[in-house]
Image 1: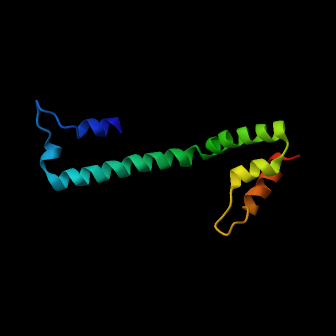
Image 2 (image 1 turned 90 degrees about the horizontal axis):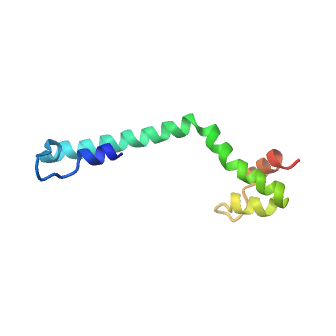
Image 3 (image 1 turned 90 degrees about the vertical axis):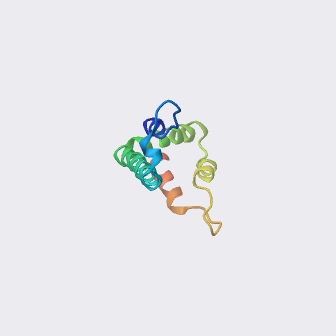
Length: 99
């Protein structure tokens, strides 16, 4: 991201050809934003197991130390639009972390 910020920076001592052409500049910005976002999504896709594990390690520790699953699940799952607790998520928590 810093590379692209450097590329579009306005400099007084030299001309930046990307900034001189308006439509080319807009297309460049859009393409680079899409490239950055696709890189982030690819990272999440490839490291999804590790990212989830990181989140649930803290949850498992809290359940082990506190022992009250309903309080933790209430914070984690929240309410859906109808006001009901997310039953699927609560069931997953109980199956995975309560023994």
